[in-house]
Image (cartoon, rainbow, N blue to C red):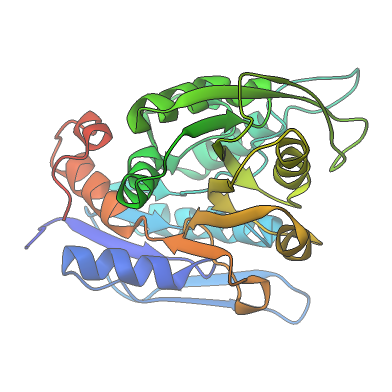
Length: 318
């Protein structure tokens, strides 16, 4: 394919995903130099003309969040000062999404602050996937294309033909997602009641729904320290679930996550490659699904002014 007026550019957060997207679209990544001064300041120089071009900057905000966010802002600024036509940020994982409201006095709403930073830097559009809360889209004053990995995950489980399957929401905040996923799979729905006594601490209370003797599939938007997903799995096992599976779009896997998952009752964990997963954090239980094709098609549709909603129905994959 030839996309005149379009360019792809990658930061350093997930070059493998950027290269896979470029391969799907059969266009090269634009060359850019990114380095650090001795005091940690980030330097960026675009090595080709971008005048009048629509540049898609691929930069998930995941593991070294603050470094990657600052790098993204500097890349956008470099492009704007080079007379770029338009900048669309492709951030499959959006950082600080869990800080989307004030849960206690004198707390920040950092998800809004990040949106402001990206806007002020000069971006004009965002392509992202499975935001922690959908209302974050309202923090932006420009279009946000909010993609979902549910169709990719559903295809994986449909191929397995799991019997007596129950999709389980790990907390009430994921009920809407779990219900949609259960409808895709033709499965029943159950809900876990979760409480957080402190950050990265989880207590599971009651189970709403019938799970005894059935295959249970926990679905979440992200797995960070794996406290929620493993606590939920143990509760399901104690209450008589037969086999326990889990899936999530974003595999952050920080701190004790991999060890917790290895020690848990989870038989298989399916993740997407929206963020890089180092080999040191991988496990034999993990299956990683690529989102490159979905993001590539979203980029093409945005560039060609075609509806992005067709992607929610599995249409037009590259």
